[in-house]
Structures are given as structure tokens and as C-alpha cells.
Length: 362
Image 1 (cartoon, helix red, strand yellow):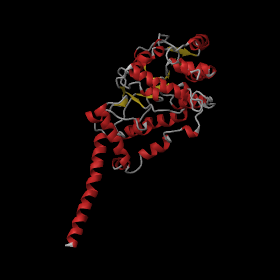
Image 2 (cartoon, helix red, strand yellow; image 1 turned 45 degrees about the vertical axis):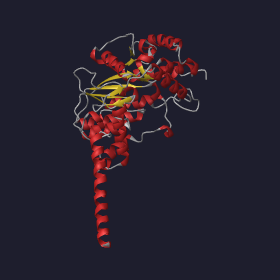
Image 3 (cartoon, one colour; image 1 turned 90 degrees about the vertical axis):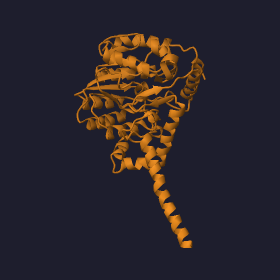
Image 4 (spheres, one colour; image 1 turned 60 degrees about the vertical axis):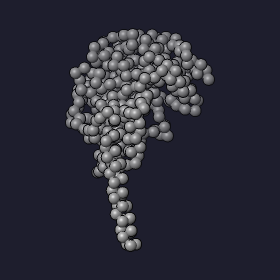
């Protein structure tokens, strides 16, 4: 009798040992939070941003990848839809807190998977990524190691049996059930949920408190990256067969006030000048204008625009190919940068925010 019970227990344990991993693997495949598979349905359309470097590298590695254009930049550029470019297949390989030293690595991998150079590269550059970032500030790991890991043996199988992956799968299911302020769909497009003005004000207030904390970057203790221009020159040299369009991405007026208040205006102009020296021209959106001043309607938080603003930018730089200034965006070139500087300096110094200005003096 004892032997029968022991045998029954072993069989039961063996079945559970097989069933539980199978359930976890099935659930992770069904939700696919790491973008390793092609499965798409209504339940996994609210994708949590885990680590965009890993998720987008997974997508590039394990999906058909054939594009004429590449859009690459930081989190601000993630809000630009890759489908906004009329008649041009573009992949958005933008990632949070992109560092200038990561540009070539990610672009080279995308070109490798694409099998050829891109006809167009749309390069989103933020003022903040011209800052020297300390090693202890790096949050998302080495992109080289991520690429190697993605291509390692049995990588996808390991992600399927992972408990951590299951946690992300569960989070995405909850996002479907209850909604979430910011999410990716299965087509690599960022969406923003409906937010009340009160919620937006709360988000802005929290962010501005963070930005004005004297113990935290990026605006306090700002040190300009002395190798910034060299990294851009390298990027241009490595992509001579592509038409590179540079986008100097916008933040809201409260952020621009911080730039002026903390004495960073010279760094701001150095950033613009170095970009234009390397590429010849750039579309500048990072200055007080109609959109950046109307931030509650145009921005999700002080540093990140809403997707419809990204559509406006794409219209300007590609769909309509505007070769001049508008009420949102101006084309800075080697020939006009000197005449633009006093205009920009006046706009930056005169920028005033009515609702959040009190945080600057704290």
C-alpha cells in the first residue's frame, strides 16, 4: 500500500512538473511581452515598456525585417509613429535614455538584419543626451550584451519558461483589462491613454520636482559630453549611403525654463551648433513655440510629447518636406545658424510658464 501511495505521489508530482512549465510557456507565448513571436490579438495590444533595447532588438531578430527607413532616438522619439511616413516603410528603433555611444551599435545591427543600408535614417537627438552620463546612471544594460543575448542558443525558449516573463505577461493582461497611461501596441506604436487635466498637472508637478532636485540629473551638475560631436561624426561616416534627417526633439516650455535658469543656454547652443556642423542642417523643435507652450494639450509629461505631435513633426520633415520655418519647428543650417541664434536666445530667455514656474525657485 505504501508503495502504491509513493508511486501515485511520484506520478502526480511528475505531471505537475510538466504541466506548470507548460502553462507558463503557453501564457508567455500568448502574451509575448518580449516581442519574440508573431502572435497578435486583442489581449496583448497593451504592451508594457520593459526594456526597449531588448524588446525592439528581439523584434528585429525574430521577425521579417525589411525597411527603407530607420527612425532612431531616445524616449522622445518613441512617440513618433513609424507609420506616419507616407509611402515609406520605417522601423522605429528608438529606446529610452539613448546614449550617443549606442547610436552606431543599434544602427549597425538594424542594417545587418535589414540586409542592406537604409535609404533614410531619421535621427532624433535630445539636448539631454549631449550630457556626459556617469556609469552609475546607466539603467538598461549594454546594448552589445543585449544583442549577443538575443542571438544566443535557445534564447526564445529561455524567455518562455521565465517567471519574470510571466510577470510581464500578467502585467500586460492587466493593462488590457484596466488600461494604462502609456503603452505599445503590437505594431511598435506608442499610445497614450485618456488623461484628465488634473492627472496631467499631477504628472507635471512630480516630474518638475524631480528635475529641480539638486541631487539628481540631468539639469543639475550638467557636464557637456566632450566626445559628443565625434560620435555624431562617426555615425555620419558609417551611414554615408543613407539620407540622414536630424530631428532636435522638443520638450515643453517648463523644461526650457530650467535650461535658462540653471545656466545651460551656452550648452544648448553648443548642442545645436555641433549637430549642424556635422550634418549640415537639422530640424529644431526644442524651443518655445506654439506646441511646446501648449504643453497640456501637446505633451504627456514635461519631456515627452503626445503622439499627434510626432505626426506633425513627420509632416514637416518628410511628408511635406518643409524647407523653412513654421510655427512649430525651424530648419537650422550652416548658412542661417548665426542669424537664428539671437532669435532663439530671445525666445528661450522670454519663455514663461504660468502653472509650474514656482518649482524653478525651489
